[in-house]
Length: 394
Image (tube, rainbow, N blue to C red; front, side, top):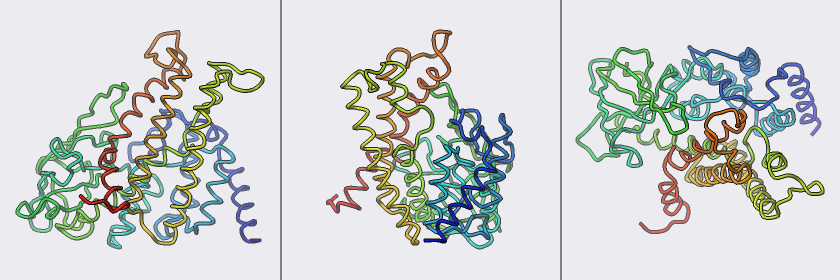
């Protein structure tokens, strides 16, 4: 216990000295700490915070030190995140490198692949995107048709991916390709990595209802990729793909459990509805917010238990679908509550009658609708839970 206290004191002192003041405020949309070769930092503190956290290995605190991680155990990791929350610190680095391909490489990658990619992920030097969905392969992902043909020590890839989040900013892609068209659709799929600067890769952003273009179409025309970039076994990429989806769903599930940044529901209600003797004046709204808070707390405790279990070496399983489903519903519910609190002020698109927070809320509310689709639809998650967790018949 004395060791835990000393570690906490060390972390607290380090954060006090190294976390810039602006990194203890709600994160603005244009200060997204995704890193990458083309990173542009509107706030110089965003880069400083990333570099300092990466130097300590705290961008990926439980990864081994030899791959750029902090080498922390589960108890030390819990202390670090508790101390970060106490000072309202922003994430120093986010993205698919940390939440998806990094964990998958730790589990399935060769030593060469780990050594090449993991330290760069930890330092925020490479922005990754995901090449899974295709125009005719969404929820039925195994129907993908992007083809990779062996050519000496390389593969030649041709096809199209869609909904490739952040592809217009990405440096590398982890991609599913079909290497054997003559077997069942779940077979003959290979998991491969390639640099987005490779000749033949082109990207077209897709404009969304939110007014942003985080999703893209990606076209692959005779893209030459070294065979050594295959993760796992050739024609057995579905195994890697499923595991990565579990990491992704767990990550998406993290949007629930009270992890949102910015003003709380109570603070917004105080502004738009008002207080009566220190409590929210509308009793129905007060009850709805309380219920949402209780669900958030219960969900956060469940997530914490899962993190502790995964720290013992267990990778996420079918329960990740539960996190993805419930976290999605909590996040959507939060934005619906915000809308009910703000009324018409929460539906502005432009004009002087709306402040910046109100305009951002409109776009965030619209964006939350995609939560039930990305990373596997809610219907798919419920099917997985029915079969893999509850053991119900097909």
